Amino acid sequence: MSKYRNLALSTAMATLVAAAPAFADKMGLGRPALPEEIAAWNLDVSPNGDGLPAGSGDVMTGEEVFAEHCAVCHGDFAEGVDNWPKLAGGMDTLDHEDPLKTVGSYWPYLSTAWDYVHRSMPFGNAQTMSVDDTYAIVAYILYSNDLVDDDFVLSNENFLDVEMPNANGFIIDDRETAEKHFWNPEPCMSNCKDSVEITMRATVLDVTPEEEGTDEAAAEAETVQVAAAEPAPAAEPAAPAAPAGPAIDMALAEDGEKVFKKCKACHQVGDDAKNKTGPVLNGVVGAKFGHVEDFKYSKPLQEMAEAGGVWDEASLTAFLTKPRDFMKGTKMSFAGLKKEDDIKAVIEYLKTFQ
Picture (cartoon, helix red, strand yellow):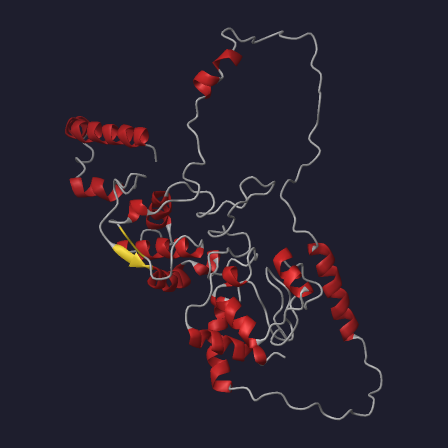
């Protein structure tokens, strides 16, 4: 909210409060608003920090609160679920034909994020977040955009120290003066032209971009499923059993199943698994990079696949720790798992789908 709008609202509110007794006496309705009632409505936070309450919250707490209250719509890693808004990613895309506008890539002021979360979230249960939980959620959103480290604590004291990447990406609307020479002081209101000529037409009505290969991938997946449903030919004599792989620590794999909940927004495993934002992860442990044939991988991963990269435990560990450090330019918005035990567990869990 601009400072001018704040001033106008404050002036209007003060006028209303001052005039309330006379109005109430005249009309016999209501009473003057109490200061605490006015304060309950005056929740906005300005870019300069005005209105920001005292409090603090760290990234790790924010991850837990976000998972409980926000992830159902925005994904565990702020990557967005279905058509719900993405809150992370999109860096360096604002000059693209289809830019991804997120808190990290587009919003110029952190105050907008804090104000909106505290005022309007969670969806359907607005204004139930404590001040500290709001700080924690905003800290986690910053972390999801690679703007702060995982030990970062956001508070009213360091709030203005956070510099948003697109802080200088907006300009003041000066059309009133800069384009004044285009204005006609006496606009024509009737019989302005002898004839009207249509010089061009819209060629695209639905301008929402589609992901390339989506239809082809779906058709191919359907073909594979239909083919799998056909009766199999008579069984050949059984071949000698392959050597058994390394034993799986099932207790650790069970822990990994819980950790994998953080991955489910983008990846699936199991017999009915399908590609989503990310590829199916069946058989990923020990597989070559880019082994899922009907998934469109990012260029960095394709290049690593051409170089002979393999998803062994070492590469999986490095990738799950810091995806963007391991693979510069990866499309995956996930920031990484923080705990070594969680990484070992989720790899063990993936081994059960070989």
